[in-house]
Picture 1: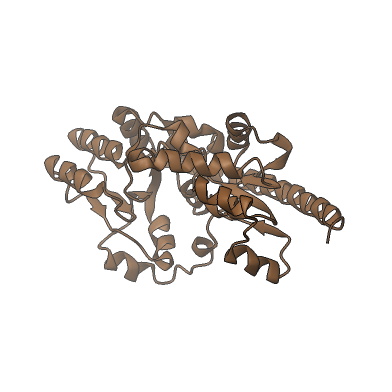
Picture 2 (picture 1 turned 180 degrees about the horizontal axis):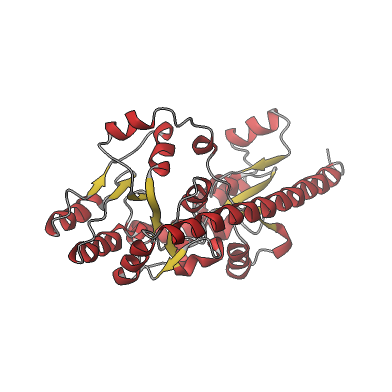
Length: 321
């Protein structure tokens, strides 16, 4: 916390963590996540990473509100971003927010988009049948890979499914992800609406099985509130699957998704219905491949900027012992 970091600076104490880095001849520390450890570095420079500012964007959600979580996140950002040599983030949109909210010089922020998980792309699909049998699935479900946080908005999918079933469209939905406190609430709704046969929650899924679940879905659905970017869209495009995504996160997807209002189950139900049309699905899949190519090009350019910044650091580092 603040008191401890002030003591370290006042007494010129170097933590064991930093001593180990210095011993390894480290000059620039790279934090690959939003870490408070950067605050305790007394000598070494560092680069830090910001995945999101959702505690500010969606302040009302319990996972960024309860028990001091908001203050804890603010403390990390306020005390680690401006001293950073480089701040790496996932989008131009988030880079602008970081600069505006925390006063970080814009030229020290590098937006570098995500790529889809290598664990997804490298896995063989030869055992698809066995994995589908393991989970008692067959082709054609709507797939939502997301942990059970309130902001992931599983609720709206359940409500949309209820609307579709009332129309006679017996859609199936598969959720995967760990429970972070919201599963029981959602399961009660599934039972209440009589959807137990049609909505499966498989819990945590080993990475070696995820590619099969993507490959056999009708569409990937993600009405999340948090962003501005997420990984499942990239993975949906990689597997050539239609994507249904929250409209306020449209900058990530361009025309490679059906955009929906995450507050409105009717919007979501309509989008789900539209992906059942083969021509619509094919168009979305093609747009997804193109969007992946665009994002790959943006990432390569960002990598070149990062290398240039690191080279500049190397030159400046020669000025002191």
